[in-house]
Image 1 (cartoon, each protein chain N blue to C red):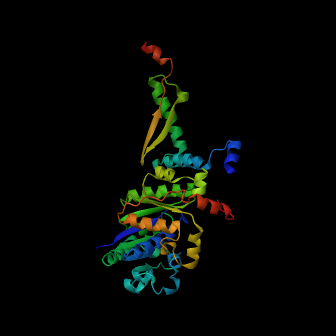
Image 2: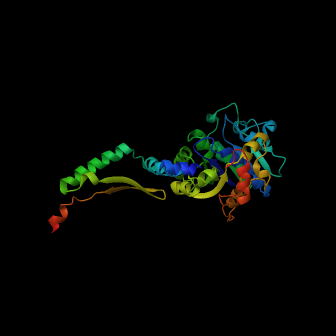
Image 3: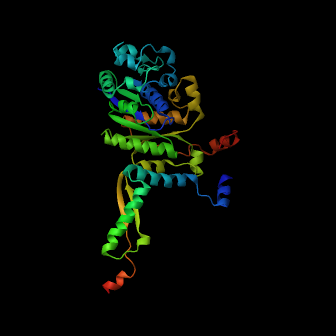
Length: 88
Length: 267
């Protein structure tokens, strides 16, 4: 019954929601990096890199990735689409 | 053989540390091991009630520490079993009455005469947690498949690593297979993946646990009585190095499901 109800409302099972929320909050807890600090890091990374090369600032992603109990800071910085042209 | 010292802790309160300590003590003692369970929750003692030993306490942990009695005098023998003893917490004192060295000294004394010492840690990550973890050879972390309990458990995993008591092992308590099946509860693999430590036990939520606490007779006393009781025995065997497969979560066959269906309030 409840499964039908969920399908009708299109609700995601709350167990999955819990897992996703925990994944994020544990990454922040373990690394002592708050979401606010992550934003600051992202802004500063963008400004430093932009000084040297053209990047697509709006698509930059800075995240904390986890494997087992190891955390790493991952910056995904797309080069701006025009850049390929320079290389010919 | 010198005892192995296990500390049972969780971060969050109410997840089942004391229930695990009592049942593990019973399961190990039923297997012929000599066991002492220490209630380290000074000021909020409960392990005595779980074991039904609350009327037999003469001295407590703090009496031992402060020299009012000898360690042996404070140990309460559970007469239902050959070799299960409780070292009760003091009820009228607080955590400042115990420090990590006291616990190490007491456990060192017990080591010679027993096979297992189980330290039932208080909730939290303050003084009580620190003195409970100090004597540990190994740490068991109890959690529930629930966001607050998992988050707190993760914090404790980190602290145990920092204390170089790791790697801690995990017991997931109060699992409700019906809710897991509907996707409305974190499942075992989710919790293990998030915490990234070894799993040593999974205990289903059962009314028998509360009934047994009411009676002061841990479910582990009846070996085949309940799934939770079996789960505790399985944990006891795994702690002794046995490779015991985990019980399937969808625990009941068709018949059980029909019974459940007929039972009011059942799944």
